[in-house]
Image 1: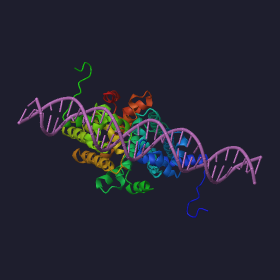
Image 2: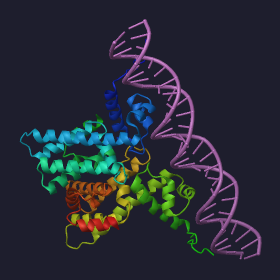
Image 3: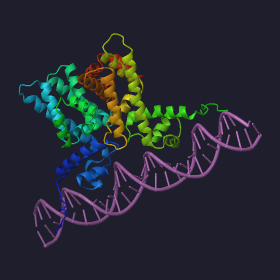
Image 4: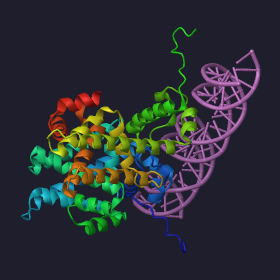
Amino acid sequence: MSTMETTRQRLPAAERRESILAAATVVFGERGYAGATTDQIATAAGISQAYVVRTFGSKETLFVEVARRAVGRIEAAFRSAIEADDGRPVDQRLGQAYLELIADRGILLALLHIFSLGNDPAIGPVGREGFLTIYRLVRDEAGLAPEDASHFLAEGMLINTVLALQLHDCDDPDALELVTQACGGDLVRFRALAAG
Amino acid sequence: MSTMETTRQRLPAAERRESILAAATVVFGERGYAGATTDQIATAAGISQAYVVRTFGSKETLFVEVARRAVGRIEAAFRSAIEADDGRPVDQRLGQAYLELIADRGILLALLHIFSLGNDPAIGPVGREGFLTIYRLVRDEAGLAPEDASHFLAEGMLINTVLALQLHDCDDPDALELVTQACGGDLVRFRALAAG
DNA sequence: GAAGGTTGTTATTGGTTGATTACTTAAACA
DNA sequence: TGTTTAAGTAATCAACCAATAACAACCTTC
């Protein structure tokens, strides 16, 4: 039956987990940890609020898992950029890889919120470890000097901020100039990625 | 009377407002907008929860006021640094001024949370306007080229992140190396300001 | 020294929200 | 086909929280 209802699809637990994690990344990215509700995440994932909580045990556990995934995605993207040597300097390849993560809706925004919760006893350690993991990756595996690695992370934090503030679809010419600087010149591409 | 109780001090409305704003800056800086409660702010300010709300009308109004104040403090610090020409390049003076704002407990952390709420219909515009105000100040009044202004803001965002993550009182040697880079070399000073 | 405005509190409430419980229904399988 | 197992929901609860209201103490000023 189900004339118009998309027949309520049952998924194996593993797939459902992924689907919830994806939805949670977006919602946490938009509203932050405290600002997001498990019900909003459930709606985004197309299931009931109770099931979100039961699948991960608690909102906090879910957020920590989202955080770990987000860091993992960055690692994967950077490793891939390091391996794919196309002649350009490595920091340029890393920068492009980072920018392309904008398209993965919510990851960079979720990351921003994770990093802002260093004070939290449960989430703080995860954020610290994640940030250091990325720093070490950029320094040791990409081979950037500490100073260059630090600059690179700084540019990344500016991109996160600009993205969170949504300066990229702002009319203001100064906003556009700033976004253009932050993304290394290609404003059009930045906007396209952010529009997703 | 009042053998041990510090006799409940009455303040003129204007002073009380400032006191609440100061407390709110710290609490919002630690927990974010959604994560902080008006009761925590009230406790920090030494008054009742109801009075906090009644003084500002709503939690949101209070946060917006905190945001405006935080941006204002940055502006003031930067203008002061621009005027006080001691022979060093202006971006160096600006950097030092920014670092010294760490001691003003909560301002930079509150700023980080403000910037992460670009999606919020009430707070987003305030964050965008504040960020652009600072960009214009650094570009037009300090005279930095767009590229340099952007780099400067990026370094600032890294400082905010490192501060929020509390990497500065971390044992990890990589954390210390990163913080040292972020603060331009003087880790000891950074730590002292953060401990403040 | 009372009147009136100002500073503040206690009590309360309506709305959320994360979590739990008990119950359903679809698929796998013998 | 009937039974078991896994996937998912509806209903509910206790805790929390921002906001309101009604009231109390303080200070000034005439």
